[in-house]
Length: 114
Image 1 (spheres, rainbow, N blue to C red):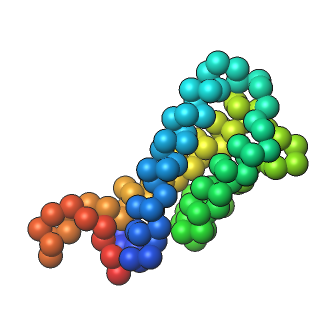
Image 2 (tube, helix red, strand yellow):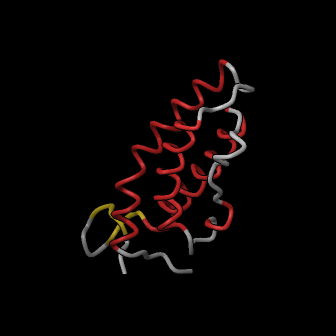
């Protein structure tokens, strides 16, 4: 199993993960109140921008084929959006688990880069 990634992918992860985590937390909070409510077109557009950035570096990872964008024509309900984001949450966790850890040559935890 390959346990190294590229510098570009590691930087892409680092650049998007905080925004994704905040978005996921906020969406779950809103969805708890009214899970059947429909997201606005602007919310879907904003969410899809973050998801597109994640898909760009996850496309050749094992989880990449399961990462869909939100439908911007048939606007999703909060519960549907939360389900989609949970796939991304799992994919990001898998990516970090595979490629981030103790690097003996550095003597500390870091990205394992090719």
